[in-house]
Image (spheres, rainbow, N blue to C red):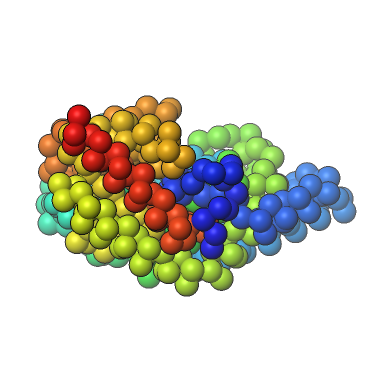
Length: 375
């Protein structure tokens, strides 16, 4: 891993949870695929070559999730996959955890929100109560790893509870894939969302993993692509990139795990230098790359801007809010007050991160924190 990576000279990128820079091997695979001129739905030789590339990518994504290729349905993004999962079963009501990504919350705006505990994990007892009180068997949506805190959710346990009540469980695994081992069968989920650009693949392509025999209603209608579940000519280059990124993700899981000591050092030295700061979700199991830091009295937006002026890119909460920074609904769900929820930043490491990157972040953030304390 290199702290220089693909970022502009002199700048440091620590926002991998928003999007991970395209990996060179993925870019090479996509450049090679540019020579494929056929439509994957065409029956002639050009079309068959394009179809073969799609099939190979589907097999690679399936291997990442531990499923059969036929269970992988390509979409235009993780957001689209979440919408298809939540809106594709019109006869079922929906329950969502209060810490879900905006694309889940917005897809089911009227759904009851299941509370989280103070450590950032869902309250399983509350899930049990909600399912017991439901008039019919709903669909539950619970992410695998939170995009802001990195806290890993008890998806397998939630799936067992859901199935005991006849419910389905959808898991948004966008932030977990490539960072921790992933097994759709072991999780027991019925649907699972993935996104290429969180793996070092291209933006604009996602996937919904489906349990055998599960058939959501299509949201986008037209031709017969993706088993008539997602019409439109396949994004060939994006899908090829997704496949390449999925293969790399499986091969480099030890590299992802090796980010945990970097994250732990970042947090340890940050708190030692700025004792009033806190780490959100630090006592729970987390993906190895994510740190959510609260600096009381300093808005997250101010921290992001100050770090950007110092050449360091981080974010405040989710990046999927049209560039707007607002208090974190995730931290609010964990019981934090509005001031704390508005004073958090997310530092997310990735394949371009190393010890030098941590050193540069610490120098910039600690200096900013001390200036703020003197102001």
